[in-house]
Amino acid sequence: MKIYFLIVGRLCILYYLILIVYSRRLRSTFAVFWLINGGVHLILGCTPLPVYMYTIAGWFCLACWCVFLFVEYKIIRAMGARCDEELDWIIVLGAQVRGRYITNSLRRRLDTALVYAERFPGCRVIVSGGQGPGEEISEAEAMAGYLSGNGIPESRVYKEDKSTSTRENFRFSRKYADAGRDKVGIVTNDFHIFRSSLIARQEGYRNIHLLPADSNPVFQLNYLVREFFGVIQVFLFHKFQ
Image (cartoon, rainbow, N blue to C red):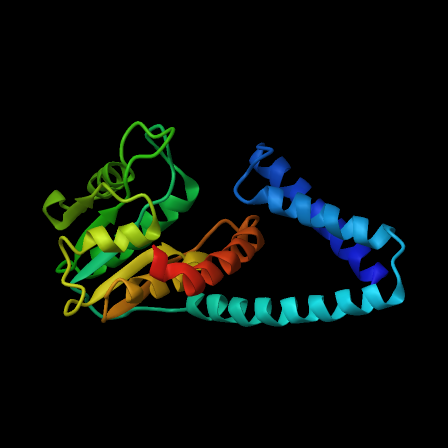
């Protein structure tokens, strides 16, 4: 187990360094998890413990890996979803806007929505996202401007600009879409599509389809691990949200 802790610890620290060098930010999204996790593993690997403690730690790690891999299987399986039929609506879930600048993750979602909207001109588009810290305009406003600037008529785009979470994205989008009857597509990054589908069903959407956008490959592992915790939270605490 000492070798396991030392190897995992070093790999986590290495990935943290890759993330901060690539993003040029010490607190890039969820990156600090790798620093803390790596530090804990290195401490466990360097600290002499009784044999029975390593046995307990081994079984605990095995249980954690089983749960983690099961959830990740669900996430990765949903990433391969495709939709080849015309829907009533697609909901483009918001992501961070820096000032008025559309970030990489959000642009990928919008480009996926553009391809689908051009293919199926009868489908209406809901852009969903409020205004958060560091954002000069709402995410919905930024997304609507991007779509109209790329040829989607404004009459097809509906702005939901009050939400501050994925759950609120779906909850407030029911102002436009009939969650019980309409065929609704979810547009978000591939790592986020499984959790989004769970939340959509909890919010009453009965006929959903998945339109996953790609994501930055350097951050993909980071996103997938973060989503594990997000999915667990949805399962355990959705009744309180």
